[in-house]
Image (cartoon, rainbow, N blue to C red):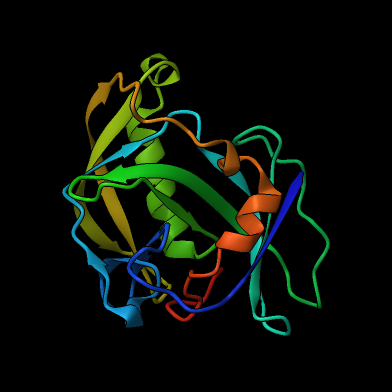
Length: 192
């Protein structure tokens, strides 16, 4: 597994992170309190960017910590707790949202976002996905039974070949990401 740690600092509209916030039932670029709401009409997912693993919020150091599997959806095993905090399943993907010029990272260990990510992947998990980028649209927001959260629901629009949508080298270079990953918001929901 590859480790990833990042600090929790100030956020602005140039944040590279996309997050769904249950409390607002909206999407944001960076922290919700910064007010950078994103309206998702369609979203293209880079077909080589999907990551699975485990993540947690380290309250003592005020930062997230992620450990990624070597191969997507094949677990390398749950890491030992960090500072007495258990890791939760996590995901990451590199996306282009219609109307935003720069690609963003959608990454979380929170339950509602994970359920939305898993449902989204189920819409495009075919052989065509291996060579093309899926484009999905936001269909609905679903309340999840027995937990105080909700999950985005998607539908597949199409697959595209897009030579301009390049996965940057730093996406897999965890040392570089550690310094730039400072804007995810841990306050929205209880991660299960």
